[in-house]
Amino acid sequence: FSALGATINDTKDGLQIKAKKLRGADILLDEASVTATENGLCAASLAEGTTIIHNAASEPHVQALANLLNGMGAQITGIGTNTLTIQGVKSLKGSTHRIGPDYLEAGSFLALAAVTGGALKIKNAAPQHMRMILQTFTRLGIQTDTQGQDILVAKNQRLEVEKEFGGAVPHIADAPWPGFPADMTSVALVTATQCKGTVLIHEKLFESRLFFVDGLLEMGARIILCDPHRAVILGSDKLRGAKLASPDIRAGMALLIAALCAEGESEIRNITQIDRGFSQIEERLKSLGAQIERS
Image (cartoon, rainbow, N blue to C red; front, side):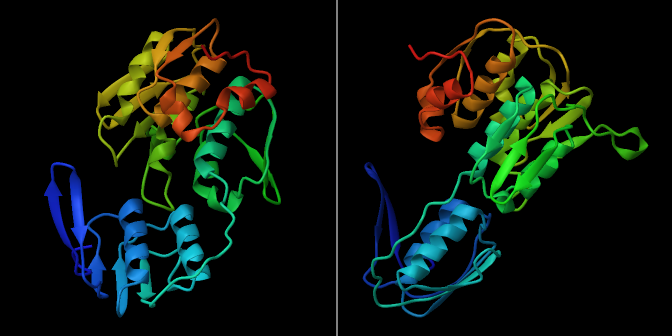
């Protein structure tokens, strides 16, 4: 916003952003932030002149926002790349837009099917947005088939970590899009606990994302937490039920997946975190045969 001519003040009620007029600018983001890119797109669409955003995020939901803005009359090019060019317009109009599928939710259900041994068809999953997720799960011994926009997970997956050349420990790391999404790291870690072999999970983008493994250790998982960003998983041990707490959306869903493939009963507290990212999750899981109740 500052680059576009706005002034920003930090007040006791939050940030106050003011501008008499926004003007296009050449902007280099210090990180490929989804929120920063989306805010920049919205502001630059009505700014005077041309704005170029370098190191822009390019996730599917960023692309969707850019397409929506174009449908409303904005002039945005470079959609899907890390350089976006926005020619400001004087006004926007109404438009109709269909919200796309959530590739993180689809990836979570894929992992759930694999570790519970069930077969699952994930409809309207937009597999074109899941290439790295599918590729990463393949390295954990999970094979999928694509039928149009649907993804099929066969029952009784092999669940064996793909070996690296030279005997190195296999390594899964997150990265900005189109790399493996950071928001799938927790789910990949839980999946790895059920796979034969050893794998290093490296969460590069966020602090403290791996601390939820304490709950998995209570469930009998063999995990070595090297530091806040890296964990070594020695897989294929059957998990057992435990009392857990959801620390965030993604770790909460990962713990729910762990509970569903564990022996015995588990209790997960603070489930409002899971609700933020997975609507009516218990009803959908019941439809798949899960024994789950909200209390």
